[in-house]
Image (tube, rainbow, N blue to C red; front, side, top):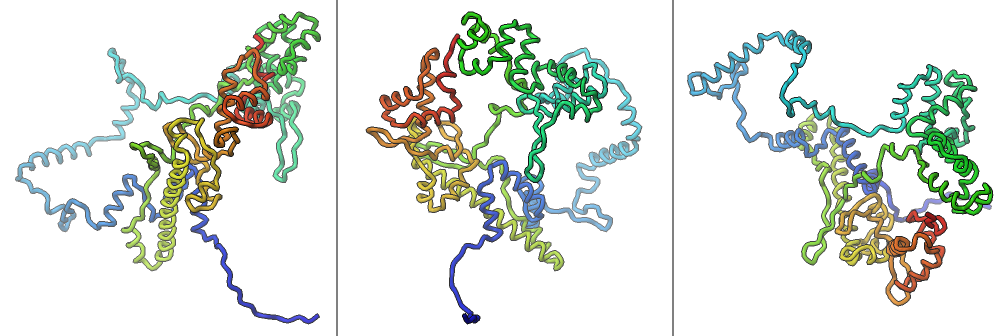
Length: 511
């Protein structure tokens, strides 16, 4: 077989991901907070970038215009202004008085004055009012974390030094629920490390391992009671012991929590050989215990997280108007005066040229991001007018392809635009991805969005008899009879789990 070398010419088209294109794509998928942080980093690293804050605007106006609005004073040979009023004018007496005051101020020994001031005690005031209140900075507070709350109690305890070190290790290994997490984690190579034991923590704290369980038991009775428990049974048992629960309740906590979860109360009555009514009473008392000790010490409360919308949808007459929310976002511009001065320096010309191109691309990418979000939102609004007018029940099925074809973009671009972007509508605040739903077939009407079906299921369960909750199959029949929605039982179960709703056996109210 012969071998030979050839030269061939081939014409082809391919997409080259330039750094500017990569930056534009990355900015497109950033959330609002991430974009603010990215702008801050660029402002710190690029001297030619300026925002609309006070100093930058002032420098811009001076650099771009070259002069200020007021005429600059002329200086004489000693640096004094020539065009100011001379003594003998109507303000000469005032000027002399001000100079005399400045001279006396300079003669004051300020170091001695401040030293004496610090040594002076505040005189008690007999009158009330705002003058006696401390500065507002001293009144700003935040909720204590669980660890801080426990460490404060530890400082007030009578533990010796090595017991305190052991207790601090226990507190440092608590998870978000307040339980003791002894898992070893993973190594950098992905292999699992062995789980920790109380003996390991005791040895690290120079504590006798025999004393470790006793110190842990004392720590578990700190507030909140049951903290640092290793499982639910231990957490409830500690609380029950402190509150003085009887033997039946302690036995149920120790051996029959699985039956309590499944509402299998007859099995508990049979195992403990007690009447069913007594089991009911015991379970009622057990349900008063706290299963998550750290519940009131969450550092971030999901209900208080404020979300700033990226766009607003407002109805103006018969039209729906989409406007962007530029509040909190710096408006960037190029400091042209500084750029022109720096470009005159041959040594800085290459550096400034690179920074100038970077600033131009960033401003252009941010503006393109804003226009793309508005364009996609306008398309969503056009397709979801019934939702905006009448609510979630009228949300129409829509997928990424529908919007991509309307705006002439790729589906991946639509996915980036709608991720972590929020829109404020008359129906509430929603993530843009909320409007993309699969379609569910209806018997004698057009298809309905899956999110509307979820809300219908939620409404049905909210109106059910709590002592005799509806099964998933019963919900299927109600949906078909009332709304003409035909779905499978497993779909109802999937939507119910997505909504965080328990099964019918666990929703049943026994008391």
